[in-house]
Length: 350
Length: 244
Image 1: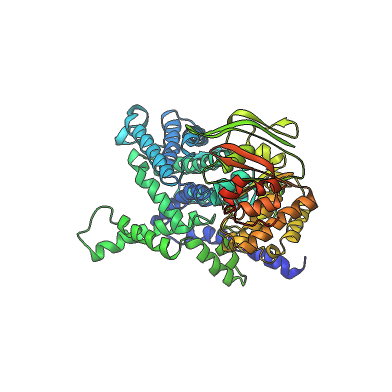
Image 2: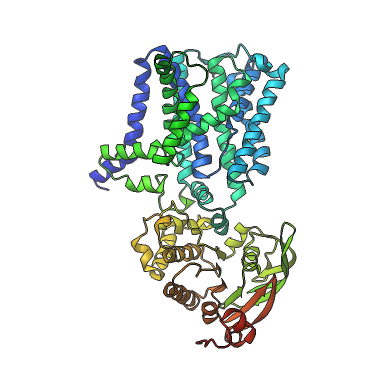
């Protein structure tokens, strides 16, 4: 392999990631505490949307119930650490196990449905879980919420400042993205893409459709649960209104904005969504002083429609193209075929 | 090679296959023709394991595969090229073909590349467009890709569901020639479901006509071409001359 080839590979696969990690490492030292908290929120949402990207963009299954898994993780951590005084990692693990069990129980019947029916079924599931959060007052505190969740600590190290938490979240996110990328590049990823392409064809080549749909649904639920657990430790107070169907729709909006057919799309969508949301809170009252309520959703509705019309693959492929031009490579193929990395090997390599 | 005995398949409450029986010899091309709703695609789906039969048996190389899952059946060397091609639009031609070898993931890259090259020899046009997304191919090219994807599973028995659907006559002729070539060069046994009865009977050794979930007529293709019932119903009547 000659020197230029090595450089090319480096630019393609690691250059962008390395630069991204450097920026992530530097940014918190140059922003104020408010912006740091916004970046933490972006990271938490991005963990959820990365899981959703695999489910929606690669396997082609829609979910309007992922806020429920986010909530299950949050409440599991809150109860295990706040009520029972267990270590934070136990709360996270309990949340993950609960989410896996619920995802399997819900996924087996619902994932036989398609499109609108699947969306409605998952929406219904989200509402049921929300009702549980609201009504199981002795465990969850009901609508009054759950107070006094301790900071997250791991092996005696407490993530008790925003800066420490920022690094925890973003390191987890990068690990989550790299893991997802590995899954997507493997034989499993190809099977997921075949399901997205055509159920019938996937079946005819020997892909167990139901099994893979369930696996990716469970995996995305785990991502949401971990994010929910960490969210509970970060804000130290949770109530059921944080895990409504609207929150699930917000996750969906983030994935569509970022680009569901790209593993970085979930994170890009979360960045755009959260930053725009904060920006709108500042800008809109200047022009419309009397406006109140959830006015941002109107803006995001318009943005969503515009993206679906003009950039149906979301922002990620466009940004990928720009990055490609920047490092002097052609990314046209990647933009057309959706996910990058569609190498020509069959899963044995993974 | 394949024995289908008294197979009954239902879609919900709908009794679609009502006691289908036939046998298939190795290296044979067997055509199944019939009108819409006769149950042809359901029959292929049942053999492929996509639909489960309620009664009867399907024996492949001495083993009952009637209750086996589709993944296991594909691994045994039975492949289905589904109706309307069902190409993975967003994936490249090569990735589409690699997905055909999905269950052979333990095979080395070199072996798989050899199989891809074999497909390219059969369909040279695909090689020139191996990086093109499957969705951008013409109907005929997609059909070639669908067959190539099926071949990547190394099938001993290949089932094609209406490969001529929506294709120009010249392309249909090419596709049928390819089927003959597959049988001659690779010894692949083929079940061909077709509405283009003339084309199917020309390429097949034996054939059957399905009507309302049952086999109405079965026999040598040449004999069926001359059968007045087939001629009247599917080949444009007695006045039609049938080149054999």
